[in-house]
Length: 167
Image (tube, rainbow, N blue to C red; front, side, top):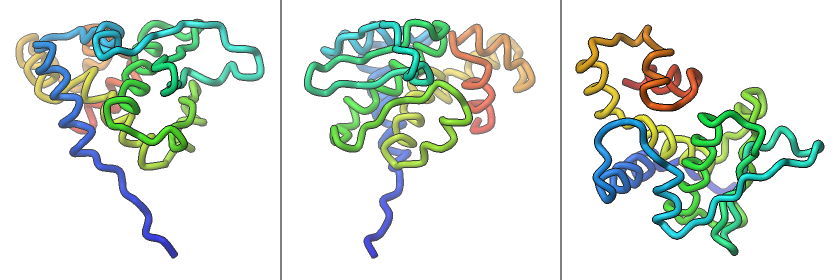
């Protein structure tokens, strides 16, 4: 039986930090749409057909296009772009890239190493640990201030809650 491949979280986080450094980003909000475009990717917001309404987005490596569900809130679209950008930056093989489900119950079913790496990259890019601790200190915020921190970083409360568990 082949050995299971584990996600390389360190590579994902280091790659996200390298992008932040490349573009001299050291304060929130991280403008991930701009970063993706500077990296040579196109972003296409579009209305998903009804039968695909649970899809937040996907990356087409052939056209270097990130497709994003137009009906999602802005902070969800931001995470989608960061996640799909990860597939490009981390050189994930096209046959290993899936779609990013919108709903949390579907998201929990995605346990492949490339999807886990993409989520890790997105989290570190949008809410870098160092930047988060600096902002918490600067504004005297606590881990309980999820809503304020989410607004400060332009991410969902769910993303911020998840992030705060790892700080």
